[in-house]
Picture 1 (cartoon, helix red, strand yellow):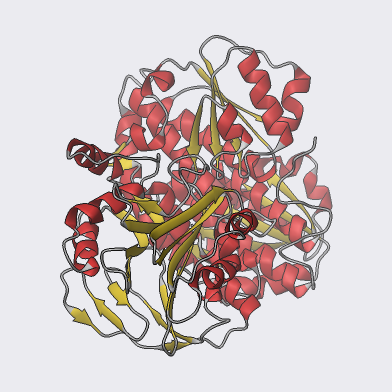
Picture 2: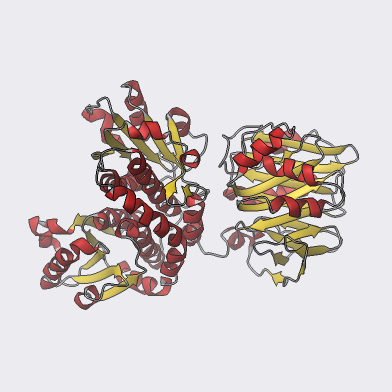
Length: 611
């Protein structure tokens, strides 16, 4: 997820786009840049860091340019650096491109272009687009862009300018949002509406496959073949703050709704047929093949993703896995042996306890794989290998889409272990991986179906919000998800919540179950469903209220519940991705009902950088 702004008209373009770009800094902030056309040709100014640093660099630059494109980046290919910052240019410095998304076939295109004599200056996937357009540019810029995008696999929102066709901006979209802002004698382009609202409320929202030529006084939209298209004008009525949140009242709710796209982004390019693509996963198969034991180390929400990861790796690869809280890891003097592999998980990549655990492991000669959402973060730099979750920036303190994408990465890693490890002589893990590959591709649409139940979950949350205590129960993977559900509820609604492996209720916890106390039961694992129903019966016998989340092929659980929600069925190993979404919504709506500051809960920070 990155921010794009472009302008063409009669005003000074550079200060206008930089000011508008600031409205999109929540979409990415590890580097920023601008390209503009003036009498001296194409000028590019870009830097690692935030937009404020770019502004300082531009303070001494005088230009009357009336055409510009700008970008603020959230790194996916290539670490944050001046060279990897956008815009990217061609060999002759005649074409500038800004891009949001992922070009899946960038490696093959780069090899082809280098063989043709093109010289690359960055590690990014985006730069191949500039060189492709250079190769095809012989007259009108939009024709070259259309030819280029026909060669691209993956997702993209592109904005392109060129000295060879200087009075236009050409934009193209596939899977990544792009909006045109309509003015009088001027027009704008942006990856999100907030960038436009200081200048216009009249917008055209492009659809997948659209290519648009934007000049100061017109907008022409075609498909990739050049066939003209009509798109309706949409008037934006949101205020600027709501617009930054996509019209949602809080960033947390926006990020919950972004999860289907986040799942798709995390998967994109990492599955080749029914197998994991190690090049895109960025983990060498020989490292996984020689691993004898896995240790997963993390904190908070990331720890809960690690618990799910334990189930997945043990099931698919038949490797022993231990999961440790990073804050305890160093101080218990863990026993590490040859053949061990440590996986650390951190959304920010700056979690102090997790960094300390990483360093302790490497100091003892054990290789470390990091799972993080932030390219260039400390854990990404210091680990031997890093798998990025590609969730995009997460603004709300309570993690939602970062957690779900961690689950996806742990699934891919488990499949990668199964592909490389000899500890599965029956081949059952391999066959299961083939099934999971198909089911993974269906997850984004199933996640959308879960989100369609939002109003039902909101009503449940109102009932939960009246209580000061709640319990979450589950077995197997459902217990792992229950831990994440209870954490979400207490961190943003301040309701005391506890998660229990359902079979442990009778060992003490039933003493706390009194009349009408809310008990949220997760029942998505068919092999333990009968056991779960017995545990539910125990709760109901003590007067507790059962709120059940189960599969849509489960007809029995609803009969034992006071309230239930049936979720789209997937493979049991993937159900945690779907079952956590309504738990996030329960926490969100309970917090709203109680008047809590959802995005900034008390006493908490997004990145825990102290021990």
